[in-house]
Amino acid sequence: MMKSSKDERKALKDENKILQDENNILKATIRSIESSLESVTRANNDLEQYTRRECVEIRGIPVTATPSEEQTNNIVKDVGKLLGVDITENDFSVSHRMPQSQKHKGKPGPPAIIVKFARRDVKDNFYRARKQLKDLTTRDLGYSEKNKIYLAESLTERNRMLFKDCLKVKKDLEFKFIWTLNGKIFMRKDKDSAVHHINNKEDLHKMQSR
Image (cartoon, rainbow, N blue to C red; front, side, top):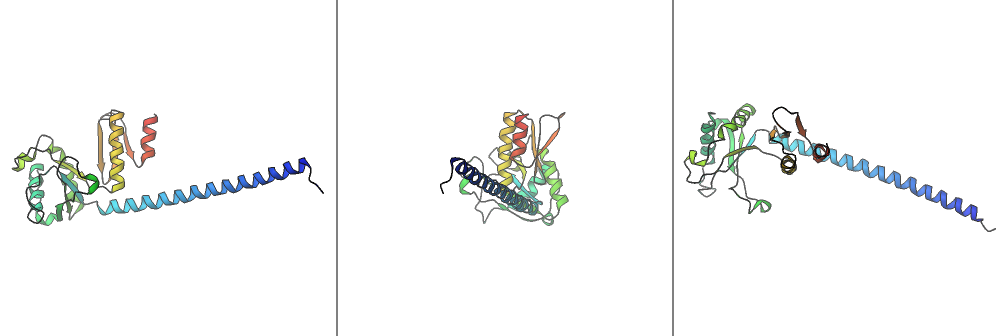
């Protein structure tokens, strides 16, 4: 017996409904997987950032010796003196010149020196004193080159890229302040405005859409 046009339309409609339901289930499953993956990625990033909590990068110091001859421990102590912070060999466990990765080659400035402090409070005192470097250069350390000296927390690659995005938004929105504290990124329009804690790109999009 031949199906009527009405029966065929109903069968097609039912089939489309089944396909739509399956498609919605698949979309919901994908969203759930993406959310779980983002949660795992964020947790891994936070854990990696936590392992860097006692680390500070010293940027701008000229390279004047081979890696095997450079005394980065002495440089750390000398920078401490500029900051007015007394740093001894017992205050940090290791320091070394960071490798110049392929992706960062060609960028201005020498590779940073990274130092891992033995205690969190010493690291915090060292990092908080960075404003003392405002009017100082590497000539104040005895170098012939006149480079600005910067202190920065050691960020994960994910947080480093987010900080780079924040710098662009800071310029676009004419914000005055951007900084990190314990690996977290903060921005502020001016001294009288609210502080924005930036966790991800979505936070930046919200700021831009206001």
